[in-house]
Amino acid sequence: MMDSTWAARLQAVFELSPTILTVTGLDDGRIVEVNNGFLLATGYARDEVIGRSVPEIAVWVDPGQREAGLAELRAGRSIRNVEARFRAKDGSELVALANADVVVIDGRRCVLTALIDISDRVRAETALRESERRFAQLFHANPLPMTIVSLRTHRHLDVNEAAVRHSGYTREEMLGRTKPELGLWVAPDQRDELLHQLLAQGQVRDFEVTFRTKTGEERHLLTNWEVITYEGEPAVLNVSVDITERKQREAQREARREEANEFLAVLSHELRNPLGAITNALGVMDGLVTRPELQSVLGIIGRQTTRLTRLVDDLLDVARATSGKIALELEPVDLRELAERCVHGLRDGGRAREHRLAVEGDSIRVHGDRARLEQVMNHLLDNALKYTAQGGEIRVTTERAGGDAVLRVRDTGEGIGTDLGARVFDVFVQEPQALDRARGGLGLGLALVKQLVELHGGTVSVTSRGRGHGSEFTVRLPAFVARPEPEPTAMRADPGAPRGRRILIVEDNADAREGLRMLLTLAGHEVETSEDALDGLEKLRTFRPEFALIDIGLPGVDGYALARMARQTPETRVTHLVALTGYGQAEDRQRALAAGFDTHMTKPVDPGKLCAFLTER
Image (cartoon, rainbow, N blue to C red; front, top):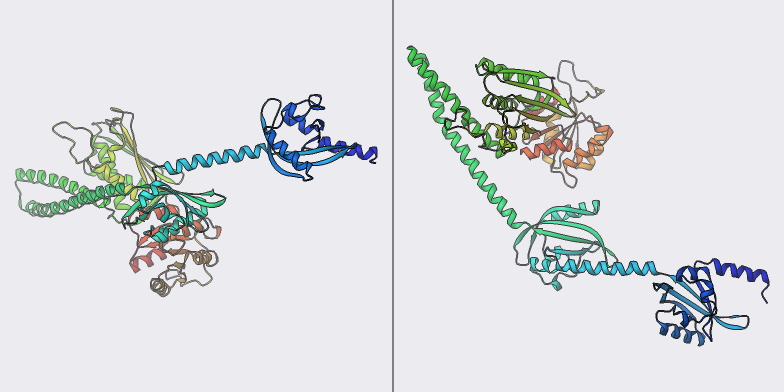
């Protein structure tokens, strides 16, 4: 017989257990005892259930399930982890795992039932199933091609009707096979890059790829990939938008632009030939004509020929800039000094007699093409003079703002209407003029300003409070920062000769790498080489070069990524990084500077200019 101490302990365990516990008579089904867990779960008070039968309080949602359980118990078998539903006093239901055994209490056969509440889990599973059902509906009804691919095997787990229709394959042909097996990828390197981004970030957004359909047709897609869990395994959801027609329209527009630019370039060249002949003839006549009347006529012809020549030059430059054919000769340029020289030139030419011109601000340098930046300045000043009445003021200011050199040209002229705004930088766009077109021009100057500034990695904008309130043009360019001189190497060259530099070459082409190494070594420099980015980064840390000549098209990790990593590494931040590449368009130069390069050079580089660059820095 159990002593009173043990009985009290068992009673305490019974009461305090978080599991729902009940004791009922095996024969009559009346409730003998319940614990606090039962009362909390069902909402009943103890005196509402003790002595009453289970059917009487209707706690089982399915009474037949209870009867089947009692039959098992009477047959001597235990009940284990049977999912059942129970009804609380307020009518709500809970789901529990039921475990039950027959026990004898005070000589009476009873049923001890333990219920583990799994309502939250069941609701979550139900919600998940409903979410999966809705996802499946949206997946298959979506008009965009969608696929689900195993992250482990890369095989298709599911495809929607749009993907089937778009690819030309049947659903059965796609399921269980990979995209390479189906021949969908046109460019495997696109797949490699996409997978690299996916593994690194867990998602890929707006990645442009070219796919091949079953019939062999190539389609351009803008694709988005996301890592998900599908039927318990990691998978990739892919949603694509077909942009083939859009790409074709863009290509057609680009072809038309190229044709127009080519025409403008040809026209400009054809116009310059007779203009040259006229200019030469005027020079000859100027030395022969002595009569004042004829000298006046020659002056008229000369001024108009100069004006026409400027228009042709602008036309040619716009065509070249639009086609990316302008190459910049970069050097440190002081913007204030440049502004003062341009203003001085206007005064000497008599064009500033009727206006007040002023230059103020800081002396600040940029890394730019002096001639092209002078064009920018002259066009902005010319525009201000054109739209500012006699006696008006034009003020040029230079300043530094963060990492930018800022040039402002402010006038008290006519201002710009809100209907024109930023369109002033478009080709052939001008303020409306009277029939006499007294201001002249083709609307090329500001378009050329925008293109030249962007070639330098900068921006240009205009603000105006409207008609009659003047305007202000703002040019922002990356400010030139002189890097600290590295410590002298142990072996110094003769003081009278150019000092040898520590130079690292990162180039995957063996012939190019070796040829450049020999050239620089013979020039007296200490040179190390690397054939890929990872080895290059390590040598940047250990060799600590003053200059690193880095090819952009490196295998695996490209030159842009190497530059970014170098700029994040303390030991290599002062190294002058030079992008030595065959990519020479304006956008390539801007991308290189944005990645952390200090200088962009296009292959092939003139050896003399390269050596001069390295020794003069």
